[in-house]
Length: 561
Image (cartoon, rainbow, N blue to C red; front, side, top):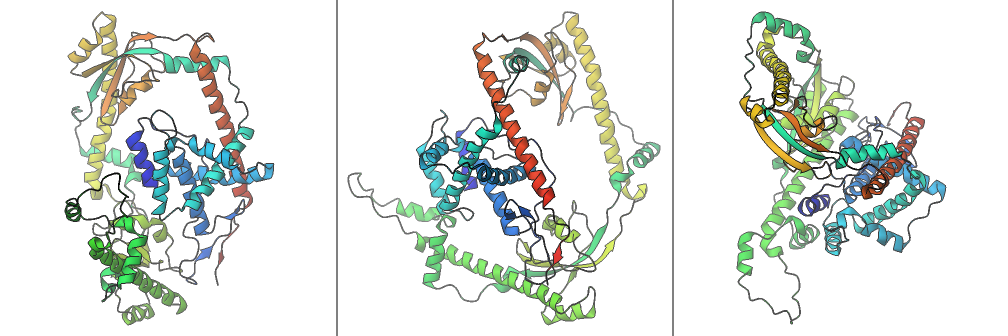
């Protein structure tokens, strides 16, 4: 369903909607994985009340984050950082608690309908509610594994109630005339700009490498080459292929599985071609019943069922191992552990010690398990079963290698590459300053900016009569930064972006009317008032979140019996 929302925006919307999700990003990490996964295998359970929700419970924490994710995307914000989304999700819970405390009632059916009709995801390009989009959303819920229609209705009602709370919290959002004038200047000034580009890739910095320079660079940046502490691990694998059931599902089992997961099994193209030869019914005849494609995709259904059964069996076998290790009080690197593995016909394969930015080439997914690996040690030497692309694994801790600083001779190649890149960046910036001064001098002498830039072998592109409200589609983003303080006839300092350096020249600059007589004055005032009000609300909710987290922070975790 989330994919449907993203596809809808990317297909139908030219402008990405932005939503103010949070002014203050607080340092808080969901305690995912803190709850026990296999019963009594030594996990720690956190209890942290948050407005009636237990953030120490994995399922509750995930539900809060999941609801916040859907809520944000329905409002048009599907490109947000995890920190913003986390803060938004927690702020929703705080806002709902405050709404109950203030006696703000849930929305009526009429208010709910009006709220849904105003959501960006259900609007067309003209800004009107599109029933087709809403119907597509409803249909997506039928095959969603994460949300039901009841979940979506609950989130709609919660968000409509939060919108009513917003009107109470936000206030009028006062702004000064000077703020409005400043915003008009930023957004409505008419520019004509020339942008010259210096290519970093083809820039010849002429960096010479010698031992003395490398040693000096290494001494000043030795922290970059420190090898962190690493765990020596062994891996016990439970591959799905070992657990594929011998027999297939019954006809009814396969049919039930297909009915519950029909969207996963599209009809093969060759089967569709055969069906296309059938005559079409005329529009005045009754519509035929939906085609039953089960027979056409039966092999795929059975294969999927066998794969899922194998994965469940592999997970179960891995769970059995970890439970046995715990219940028998087996120690790390012991003969008892070897005997237990042998009894279960398993082997522990040693892994070469690695850092998470350079996992083993044949097991790149190990970099995803940094948190689980960092928790391993002598007291807790085995991990929970962890899923992999072809099964499950259990990681066994053997030892911890201390961090160390390598000798320069051990990392000379990397030091040399870093030194060349560092020197090239410095010289690129210095060249930018030199070129900017030469370009400005050439313009003052009467030469056109374009001719001066071409003489320096720079690429030049012109953008005429635009505002920041309606900027050119292909203008480099770095050039926008120069417009904050650029005057007509000036060449801005070079702004580096990626592998390019950009010089912006203001060929013309026409300021807008900043008096209240300008029709845009009232429009901008309303925008700034809305923004200020939203910022006030966001700051208040963020403070409630932070206070609640501090008040109920668990002093320590209690181990399960």
